Amino acid sequence: MQLAANQAALVLHASEDGEISVDVVEGEENSLAASLCHAIATKFLTDEEFQADLQNMLDEQQGRVIE
Image 1 (cartoon, helix red, strand yellow):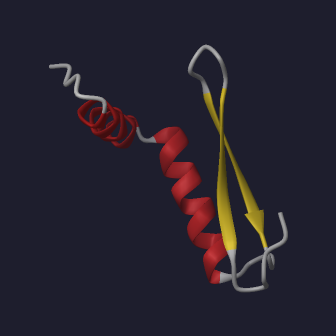
Image 2: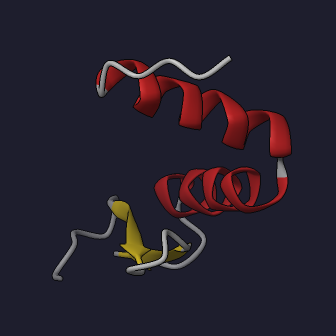
């Protein structure tokens, strides 16, 4: 993936068993975009409340809200 210097992207990988891994692709190291992507990736991997919020969003999109 080729990015401009002011761009960065989160790349999510989903395994068959539902495990998610996150990579950050940076156009330029230490840019604002790269820093934000790293912060989001860290939150995604370490914040259980954020993970639960995301799961609830996915469940709602699929029409199966779990309480």
